[in-house]
Length: 153
Image (cartoon, rainbow, N blue to C red; front, top):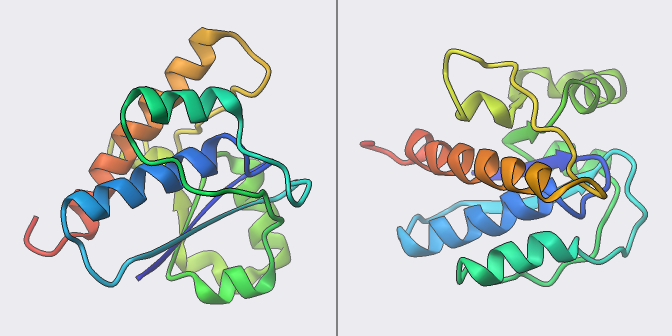
């Protein structure tokens, strides 16, 4: 399974989701899962948000090498599952690649199944509260995602 996380700049949310999922699949010995991330408005080559790197370091989660990239048609074709953070990301991808509709959903869906359209709002440049909120949301969503994609769970 190929999983693509998409946010705006590909330095905070999609970077964090990818890092946490990489750690989870490693810890749980999950095979045949590839993970990538991209942004709908990324400046290619930008480093990861230092606040997200600090969060990973504090949690003793390996920090992957990262340089932001724009989402491409190759990413969309590659992905079996596309997880976006906000409705504008969903709308951008659907408009650009209508064929992606059947494999795209909001990552927020995995926070609570009762709220499949929940957005994970960009914390970049905002308060520590906003970062903590997003870090908690993404951690919970990825944990629930792992259960959803793991056979027998």
